[in-house]
Image 1: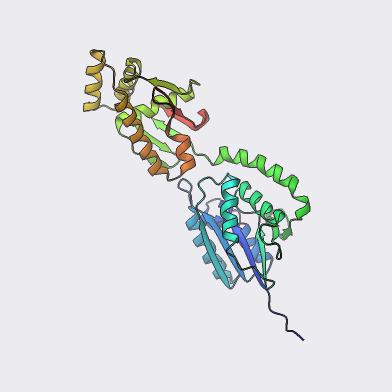
Image 2: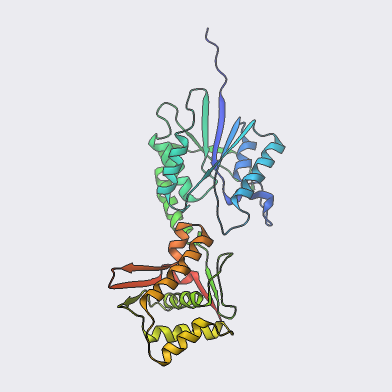
Amino acid sequence: MKKKTEQTKVLLSFVGSNDAGTLLENNKGEGAIITALMNESFDEVVLLWNENNYFTPTYAEIVKHLKNKINKLSLVKKISTHKMNISDVTNHNQIFKQLKNFTDTLTKSENIYYTASTTSGTPAMQVCWILLGESGEFSERYPLRLIQVKDPRFGKSKNVEVALDTTLPKIISLKKEVEILKKDLVPSVTIDVIKGKISIGDIKIKLSPIEFCYYRYFAERVIDGLGDEKFSGISVSLKFMRQIFKYHEESFEFLDTNRIDLEKMIKKKLELGIQTFRGNVSKANKKIKIALHNESLSNLFEISSEGGRGARFYGIKANPEKLRIIK
């Protein structure tokens, strides 16, 4: 008689902000991952995480907290972590591709029983777990078990199995949540006119005075509902130059060479060269990209340009409610 091989149970889960547990001041429990491991016996847990640059605690800190807590409670024999590189955690196309690439590396056999928790992470991540399970993309021979973790605040906690034949309506509902989440996850820009400073969320963007004035100019156009502005030819208008000069005077007491040169040109009615304008825009955008280190956010908040060589339209893509000017 053939001896039955011992089965290994593995829990897969994205790490969500709710898993921060005691790292949060308004701690409401240990989060879904710890709860899932306490509800059911697993041999291994795999923590999938993606870093952010504008929320605290960081996900690296949350992962460290989870590892310490899991080890302290002796919940599993093995903890594995996998850092993902998802630029937009609300984009299910990005998430699914990376999730599928990762799960393809897992050993699939009758001796390893994989369970994925759909509770932690963004709604888009939940959608991807469900798509992975329903499509059979995880494994044709060894299907993926999906669970939702019942919050202990609402009665006795348990790991509830997700019935794959009933989840398609949930996907539609979750996609609606994704659209809401996009708005919630995007930080706001604060433009402090008095200090001459700009911050995106908690990240300070170190722009030069002239770059600050450029950014304020295009931000105010968005707030006022004016949209992108067309710049054509070999120079920018005196109207634009006068507005930049005005902003510079309002935010910076000192008189630097840029403002002196700008004032001279305005008095002589000499228009600023388009190459100088584009150079200042490029320098500001580069600083924004480096500070945010997030392609999706950079695309929202940089001074974008669209069009051909003869005429280009410049503006900021972020919604007006994400731009705040303090005077």
